Length: 481
Image (cartoon, rainbow, N blue to C red):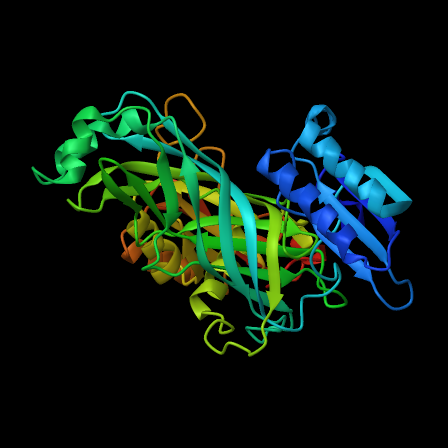
């Protein structure tokens, strides 16, 4: 959506608001009746914890009370009508106050900050959230899906500012703690108990483990944070956000941790407001190693899938600025920038694009494109290496042939990479001396270029081209000699 004002934080129509005028000079009798009403609804599971507000005017409109609460679900209203204790409290409210106005079936729309601007002060947020992931355990026959449906996130936001001095405003967020429970998968972790030392609680639990709850939480020994960057200079939203976490998973058979060297990254994703309630952050991290903490053994992999905050519990501004929590780590900015380059939509050739080359031996290919051809190494992330050619990126992708069927004997068939050089002849001889196969000697082409071709380590055809002023390519707006 292009306008955060159109975002509904809830769609069930469960919020009610009542405005009452106290019939007596002591409005606190009416306040007590309203509070007892909500407390009873909560005790019976008919009302949610938030939002809940009881507001009382004492000066301009003495005795006017505003009461707002939220039903737990769609059937709560009817259950309340049938409950004698709730009906008695509603009669007590009617005896103490005259109704001025009431509205039911309301949706929550907005709670948080200005949708156009990052907060100018730091603060704490407690959010309700959910996440899910896939786990593959060595020796297990089935893939395990873990779903945390009612978790929490406690985080500190720093004031909005340009954290890396690049002209864009950002907001750094430090994740203090997060986690939640998920059940139904305990039996799949049974054999992990055998890795624990004999006689320990984890070892004993491994034998009789059944359908028990698993807890996913934060590995507090490692950094957990997020960055939100404005997409434009005139306002902070829409913005792009990314979260970086490390997980610890508690099971009766022992504690598992995700690979400490590989963070779980969710996003980058467009957000329209802060806190980003309702925004789904997907991860393209891929599987990371899952380590049995007690034994130190790798026992499988975890693939993160989605992270979402779905409600605000508490938000409070800092009274005293926090120097430590407001300091954005440079490593987070670097990771954010690298992920942004991976997820930037393709642009027209005139302003640059990238190509992906699948390679067998990454060090060999890095040497060819970097040390030998002299291309600028831009970044390396998730095993992918990007080299800059003007405004175009050549990305070396490690791994198997991704397109199905047998891999062609020569992956370079049908693909040619052209690189402009100052001197085709001397460049060709330099590559020949390095041991690379020359497939076309320097040749004057009829369209005004002098070309030569070599094979890269994976058999891709790389052509070196030297243009003359009469070449047709000089008429193209994106040509960079």
